[in-house]
Length: 112
Image 1 (cartoon, helix red, strand yellow):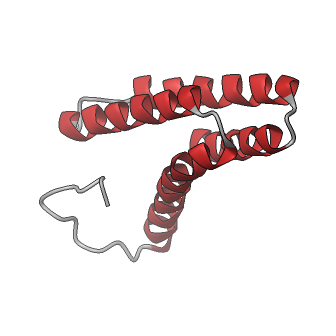
Image 2 (tube, rainbow, N blue to C red):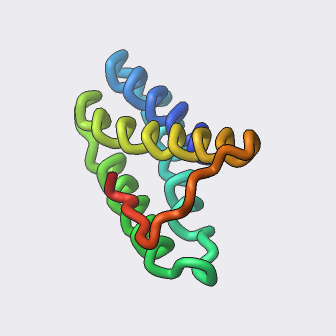
Image 3 (cartoon, one colour):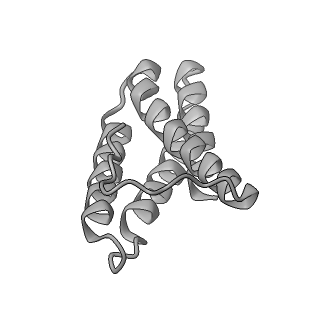
């Protein structure tokens, strides 16, 4: 799953920054950014175009945060948001597999 990969590479980037491992920083940053690009561009806009546009904007913003990160703690919010998305998808899949889905709401709040 792309979200799992983005979380993994963001954590790897943070660890490499902590260790001043410049080769590790380059690799982890490149991989995390590549996944964020995929998450922001590989969206199906046919079902809910507004949500797709918001997710695209969110991933573009996260990409920029990764690019601009100078210190490990600059990635805290990136990791928090990626983990939130990953966990929300996991929960949605679990609910749907268990058949315990609740009624969908009329609006979708992806901001939390």
